[in-house]
Amino acid sequence: MSEVKYSKEHEWIKVEGDIATIGITQHATEMLGDIVFAELPEKGSSVTKDGTAGVVESTKAASDVYTPVSGKITDTNQSIVDDPSKINEDPEGSAWFFKLKLEDKSEMNSLMNKEEYDKFAKETSA
Amino acid sequence: MNVKKTQLYNLHKSKGAKFIEFAGYEMPIQYSKGIIVEHNLTRTKSGIFDVSHMGQLFLKGGDDLTERLQNIFPTDLKKLNINQSKYSFLLKENGGIYDDLILTRLKDGFIIILNAACKYNDLKIIKSRLKDNSLELNEDVSLIAIQGPEAKDILEKIIKNVSKLNFMYGNNFDFDNEKIFVTRSGYTGEDGFEISISNKKINDLVNKLLDLGSNLIGLGARDTLRLEAGLCLYGHDINENTSPIEANLKWAISKNRVNESFPGAEKIKNQINDGVKKLRVGIKPNSKVIAREFTKIFDKSNNEIGTITSGTFGPSVKAPIAMGYVSNEFSKNDTEIFLEVRGKKISAYVCKLPFYKKNYVKESINV
Image (cartoon, rainbow over all chains, first blue to last red; front, side, top):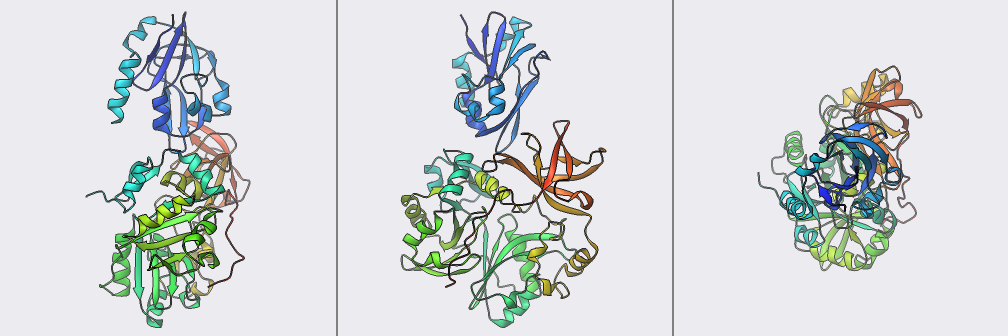
């Protein structure tokens, strides 16, 4: 059973076993506009909850991508580096950013579920 | 200060515009299709830009006015044909740029189009230099541009004979029993027109253009289009601390005016003769990394040699592009330079402008 959770920095995270897949939300891509550049963390590197773990740039501006949980990067999605427009097309599916091995599953507890995130996104963009 | 709205505000809103405040106006940065689609529509079809926030200054007068304007601009206005437009500058005494602008000579005067953020300051300076306190910006007229390969045919359907205009010429035309002023010019690197029309009729005109298949384009795509075309954005690529010579815009200073008198003349003459310390150049990163405004530029020995003034992803170039100032000795094409982005130095090279080749019209007959 894998539940998708969301962060206040507009990342989504899906956990299967102790591996988490992380990307940015549809709402985030709508705010950013056309994404033209993506930079991912290095495979094997360690990232810390709420630390930066990548960059996306739209035609307008650059934004950091944060990791909502700590862990060691096990995989990155090179296809979004080669063609960043995929992030606009399928942000919560095939255009995931990176996978990591979870360090502390309890970090998931502070994240929002879909309903909470949708409400949060609506309130903060109003 | 109250944020102003142009006459087209409600139309922008109805087309899904996202707004930003720009120069005291609420302006559309993009519509629902997004910046890249809007950019590509302008390059392949046509796009309509609301530039009503820009200043429109109409000056009435004959040879005496030409003479007086000649004293405050670095352009040979006496040599301009009637209805001819020229890119020029309002200069500081030290050669810095108060604003870049377009002057058009008319039978009975001049029209000057000023940048939105500068227009009230420009007016003050022009009033004082011309010693004419009666001058006012015309706020009863709006301004739009229509740009792109289809602009000519679409506009011709509404404004008869407009397609006969030459590039950088203007004239009066009829629209719905109103005399409007149209120039063949723009800020995208595409063929196109700029249309000055009453606030009352601007919505009607734009709706007609939309019905004929044109598209509204926001400031976001306006920026990617102009940067691909190598055109300067005032307040970024040029400002009060850059001279036209440093900005590599010497071509806009009339040759026979260099030894004459106008504000900034001495500095410009010296810079033409002695060279400049910094120069505006085109810059292309050797990777997909985008270097934005204020990015520091270094040589291979890690000496700081300049700053990026505009940088984005060029949708038609399909690569990151930038402009900036570098020390003169690094201004040659193909010179390798390094840009500091997020703490890393990325390789880039100096390249010639524009990034995107222009499609300006040349063949038509002047009317």
